[in-house]
Length: 481
Image (cartoon, rainbow, N blue to C red; front, top):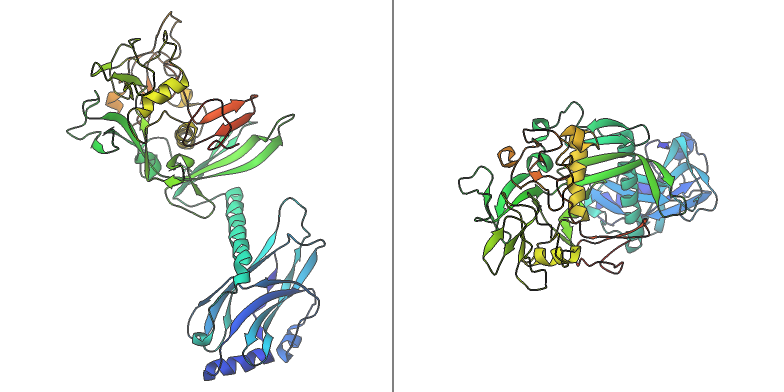
C-alpha cells in the first residue's frame, strides 16, 4: 500500500488559487494522474508545471466542500487495462484554469511507493484516492463531476466493497454484527464479532433478527391480528394462521477455502464465515428471503406449525389428516398453520404433489406460498450463528425422528410447543420422540417430510432458484442458475 506526503501546490496552482480568492475565476478539478518518476520534496517545493512518465489517469469521481478554503476530492484507478505493472512514485492533481486550460495544481510524492500490478484476467486491484486539498475559496470551486467519471465512481464502489470483503476475512469486531466461522474439514466452529461470549437464547434477544421473531395470528390479507402473549392470540385458526414474524436482516458470507467441484459446476465450501446484522453495512446484503419479484419487505411470515388443510366446502379444518383434500386448481381448500392438527400427508391422494400443495397455499390469497429455498435458508443461517453449530439436533433436540415405522401418517400432532412460544427448545419427554422448536418454528426438522418450493435440481448438481412464479421441472425465468 502506497503512502504519500501532503500535496504541494504548484506555481500554476497558486496562480489559480489567487483568482479564486479574488473571486475572478472558477476551478474545475479534472483528473488525478500517477507517475513513475521519483521527485524529491525539494523539487516539488521549487515547482513543477507537468509530470513525466505518467502511467494512468482518472477522472474525479466526487468533490465536496469541507470549509471555506478546502475541498474533499475522491477518485480511483484500477488495473483492468494494464498489460504491465508499474510503481506509483508520484501523484498529481490537475485542474482547469479558466484562462490557461488544464494545469498541474498540486503534487504529492510517495514516502512509501506502491505497485500497481498488471491485470491477471481474474481479479482486479485498485487505488482509492480520498484527500483534502486547499483551494483558497471553496465557494468558487465548480462542484460538477465530469460525466466521464461515472466509471470511476463505480471503481470507488468496487474498491470499498473490496475493503469490506477484507474486513470479513480479517474479522469484524462490531457488537452489532454476529457471526460464526465454520471449518467444514475439521468440524470446528468459532464465534465471531458480537457473538463472541454469547450463549444461545437470551443473549441474542437484543438482536432484532433473533429476538424480533415472534408468533402471531395472521389474517389472509396479511394483517397481524394478535401476537403471542396478547389477549386475543389463539392457535386454533379462529383468529388467523399461526405464523412467525421474521424481521428483515442483512447478511454476508465470506468463503475462506474453496475446492473446485470435479466434473461439475461450482466449488465445495471447505471453510467460511457467516455474518448477520440488523442494519445495512458495507459489504452486507439484505437476505433474499425479504426480496420477492424485486420488492423488498420489512418482514416475512414463516409457518409456526406444519401444514394442515382448511376444507372450504365443509368450512372446517381437517384435524386428522383426512384424505379428502381437493388439490385441483381453484378448489378453495387452503393450506393452514394451526395447533392441534395432524400434519397433512395426502398419503393416499394422487394430487398430493409439490404442485398440489402449491395450489393449496396460493388459495389462501396473494403473497401466500409454501416455504421456499430463501425462507428456509434464512432460518438455517440464524440458527447456525446463534448456536455455533450445524447440528441442530444436538443443540436443541433430535425432534420426532425415532418413532417406529408405520403404515400411515405417524407424525405428532402440531402444537406441542405452544407453551414455548417464541423461544427454542424441546418438549418434555424422550429425546427423539417429542417435538422441537426454533424461535417459534415447530419441527423445523423431523416429524414429517415437507416440500420446499423455489428450488429445482437437475443432474444432482445443476440448481435453479426462484423467489416467485414457482413451477416444477423448469430452469426458465424467473428461475436462475
